[in-house]
Image (tube, rainbow, N blue to C red):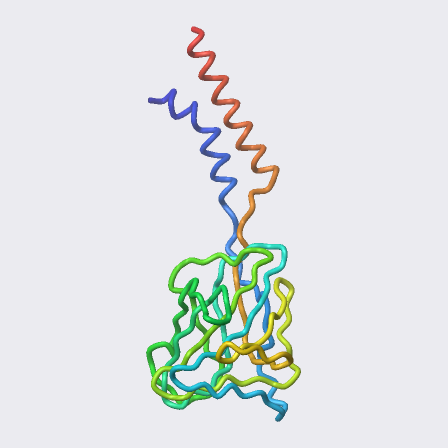
Length: 207
């Protein structure tokens, strides 16, 4: 038993080194929050049965979706929020949930929604953040001309009821966690550990 442990110890150590990474805060991929409140607004007055969406295209890096935040003005209802691969008809990829998903509100402000299951935003792919009110009107608010920007994604437009409205901007923010890619040095350590264990095994068989 002791020999088995010694034999596999280099591989175990190297694997632990490869996967151990410090935990960091999520990154803002794209957004235009906080709401500047300039007095010149875009209003998406959405009633139950209607939906509105913003699109964004990922850059050259994959991210695990952490959250989506929107500046909403609810009038006593709740909302369904999904991430879709198309603006209309939208094709849900993952559902998002937050306080406004279950509790009606009349308070205007930033509402954050998190995915109900793990979801990876793939590099070079366009996604659509879609919401639809339940029970009462919910207005999506935005400063005119305040286009969402970010270091890891670009804005892909606004859609209301399946129609594109170029130049319309609404307040939102997408956050994510970078997908870890093993560094070459760590992969080399794993390889060295595997070779070392294989050599020890061959020596034992040759005895």
